[in-house]
Image (cartoon, rainbow, N blue to C red; front, top):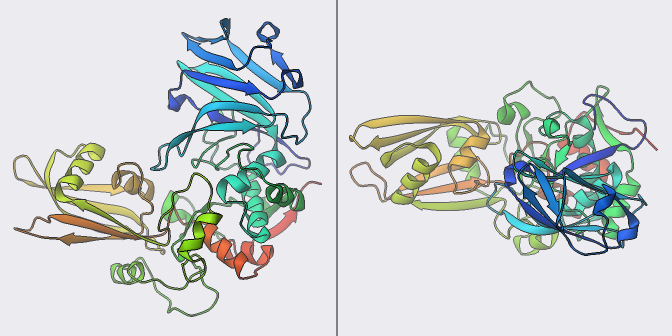
Length: 438
């Protein structure tokens, strides 16, 4: 596994969680393109029968009728040969988000499957550069300009090697296959462009003061990137700060932590790199990853009736509210993203209660049946009678946490002809592009 704080001098191997215990999945099927290309461990599971049907049976696996504690498919040839893959199905994509679905994954490298707390755990083991090829066009489409694919690959490499969060280390893998870490869909959408992007940038990372950058990124900043400390409540990181996604001073400087300025910003469409002025909405779909939804990424709107809002907040927070009176912003970051919000409501005794929701992530979790696009939003109270709104409209900006590289903004820069170093410097000021292994 990767070690936090270490800068590798050779290409490392990475362990990627494909099926996680939280999926509560108890069966999976595998198809091998060619069984002789793999060593099957333990050996008694070797069979010419396809596919491999795997089920959880108490604390072990049943594989085509045979029992084992673990299955390891070890690929004998570690090269990039799309004729030698493992097809795994079903696998969750968009885990916990509003675009969640089940897909088939085609995987290079090795695959380990075991039981963890009564559910399946599947881990893909492969060289880092092969993993990055798959990330590039899982995150964004192959139609993107080369500068975007190259920049995305460098950022993905930097983030995974910085290895700051180590969310899944206790389960024995470095990253998962989904938006929790980085979107990885195996070779499903692997293209020549993605392979070229990895080869052309092989071993290149962003460094800041001698350490690999924790290169966060999101789909759309909404015209203003957010600071690290606003989202994750940690120490200030100099290269992850509030930054306008503009090429000139076409818009006056605004502090979007102010409610007045945030409302003005969100209800307008400044001509940022990630705006429709740079990447028209009708062409955006061709550049997005396959899991992404068609929709409005730069500016969006969500409507709730009073009963829908009350039901949602009761479900998410257990309020036992009868009516929601008001949703009050308490604290915003410099991009307008809320990290503290207050809900005023009446309970079953008709008493007025207050409940705070803290953190950008929790706000997004609470204000959508699955997960809200961004926490940079304002709330309009409509059809108010006796101080009780009949409707609420959330008007928002951006898609994701907004820290670091804005993927649609970087796409806009690439379409405008910006080179890779300029894109990376824009989103990670003060960083240095450095090759750490051949």
